[in-house]
Length: 334
Image 1 (spheres, one colour):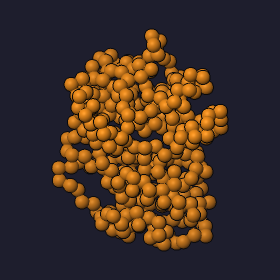
Image 2: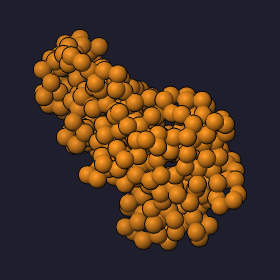
Image 3: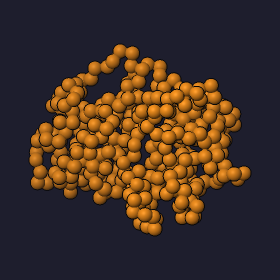
Image 4: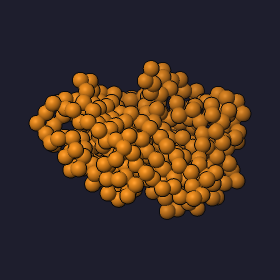
């Protein structure tokens, strides 16, 4: 696949000048990218390793606001894909991008988008190796395919959990959901710093790559939280044919989210099903808890124990003695 055809009718550089100026430098660290001048990349694989491949599509007006800064759009595009790799215990290595750009997009936007990609590459350790670019009369649409590596037979799955395993989650839940609400004009009584932090959690999530690597050989099942804690726990339970009992009081919330819940400005059920967290949700057998504690000593993020898995296929969230009801369990496109 060639990095092809920027057909936008605008006053900007020609297609190949754009590639050479903004995107070829992002591929320079990988000889197999062939400087984005050939029909496809030729990548060497390491013996004893498996390649993990994932693809996500972000659409303006659905996954980000059309007027969001280009740098943050680029960072989110990388992060949501690398979060999938993290959930598999894989190290990001390469990626490709297919971009459908509205005709209104101008060269400064492309320059800032490429700047965000460069920042993400430096932070996450992967290299651009190809893609495609076209013009569109529709919304800005960005599709990224990420490739990672994991030692053979060590990839983490959703399907390995067993009844009796303990359930953990990284970071905090609900910040991105609230950040979207802030951008929509809600929660204006929060302090400016709080609003900025929530917005950043929505616009530029952090894939838990180091944690994913540390969980290899320890976790029985892992999923990243993109659709919401409730929905993605259900996905893990479905794949492993188990149920879960979760203590909602143990679900980690930031001070801002806890304040919003306690003041009834946001429902706890919405926080738990909101989505866009990109934290890791995982299960571990009781015999591996000590191993988890050892790897977390120098970890990048706090991990919280929130419940356990059951033989029943029911997924329950309890608030004290009460069973929480959800109007929706998570984000759905259709």
